[in-house]
Image (cartoon, rainbow, N blue to C red; front, side):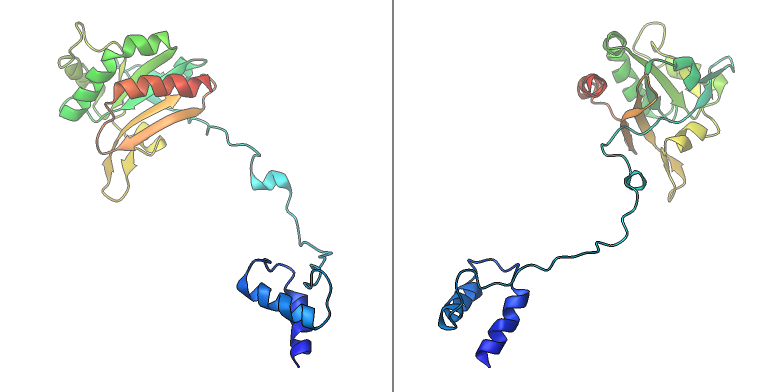
Length: 214
C-alpha cells in the first residue's frame, strides 16, 4: 500500500522542490523501493495551450505616453486659443480656479518665477482658469511680475478643459487644480491633479526637462 501511494505521488511531484522536508522523506522511501535517481515523475507535456489572442490586442509591447487631447479657451479679448496654437511646441497647462483663490495666485507667481527657465527649456506656459474673459486681468493685479504674468491667462468658464483633463472631483462636483505637460508631439509627459496647486517649481522645472529628454 505504501508503494502504491508512493507511485501515485510520483506522478504529481514533478514540481516539488528537492530541499523540502517532505521531499527528503520521499527520497528515503524511494531508496527503500529501489528507485534510482530522481524519483519524481516527468512533467506532463501539454499539447494545447488554449486560444491565443493576437498580440496586438494585448496592447503595445512597450509603454508610451498617452496622447494629449484637444482643448480650447478664450483670452481676455474673447479670442479662441487652442492646442493648435501650440502645435510643434512643448506646453505646460496650468489649470487654476481664479484670482480669488489665494493658493492659485501663489502657484501662478511661483511658475512666473521659473517661466524664463521653462522658456529656455523649450516649454511654453498657458494658464487656464474658470473665470470669464473679462475677469482674467484681475489675476494680473496680483502678479509679482511687473506688467502681469509672463504667460497668457485664458478662460474656461464652461469647465470644458478641466473636464478634458479630469481636473474635476465628480463626487464633490467641484473643479481641481492641475498641471499638465504636453510635448511637441502632443503626448502627456507629466500631470498633477489635486485640491492643492503644485508649487514645487524647482522640482517641476527639473522634472519637465527630464521627461522631455527621454
